Image (cartoon, rainbow, N blue to C red; front, side):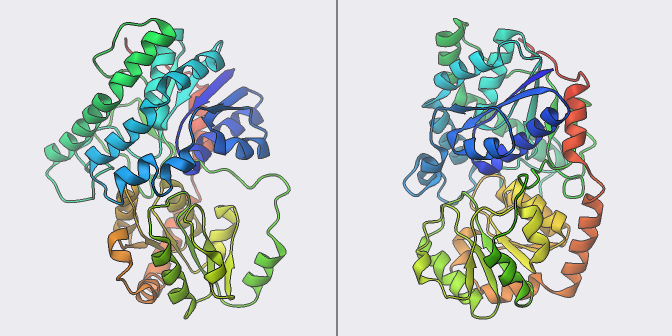
Length: 414
């Protein structure tokens, strides 16, 4: 089979689809990944054919960028949708043209992220069966509210309404650019309503997100999708020596999120380092590394699957991939959510008793040593081990690959 994967977002959005593409290639099928150009090295490391999409996601999320200015650490669903639509609007026509060329002759088109509507438009125009994927729940349910809202107790009907409202708002924000691209690329008439009738796979663990009873049959939770370390990867000697030199350290890293003030983050890392050994991943934060204490080890890209089991706790932003990696590792989390679905995942960790939450706007005034002490309490560590044992039984990548190859893909309803 020939499978085309189409997504647009940060590294955390792209890696899970890369994991699926890698697995299908391993099984002897042809797969290609279309994503932001920053993911080209990742695809190359894992032997995945890659096509870059127009845009620069790293620039967009850094201070002053499209997403950073609009979101500003607040999880208001209208602001998030508008920010994402503004980013996509600049590139929708280019994405659709690139996807049309790459997807020709594909048996299945798998899409996610900011390119989801592009994927649906291309699948419809080329008559290619498709599968939607996501790392957080988008399907309406009575059991919890929309993932881009801060968790709160609502009656079931209100929970369902938040999903419907978010999906309608998102389509309203994206629709003008999608219809303009459909006209320019395919000569298609404007579309008023959302596409329906295609299956959806969620790369989420049932241990963190039990499947709602009111989801339709074509929606499935497979377990999380993670990439293994690239062939031949070995930890740097400095990291191995640091880990061997004392007690398990605390990991601090916010991935591609760049919304926190670099000075605040620097002061936090230094404050924690006064009482605990620290591994720090600067990511795209812009922190002045020359001002860090000498006993803080600065990391480059390091596989979470290898690293997190060797830590005492993980301080992170609450992205779906990092959240699942910490939970699989059996270590507690201190989540500092910035925006979007990060508050949702912080709530899921808190509900399982394996994480604490400190929103970004409160982080500067918090006592990080107290947060870490609470996260490392024996009861929380024991629950973290229990959740990790549940997740160890899952094979999210294998199950999703089985479903992709099993003929579930369908044309979206016109």
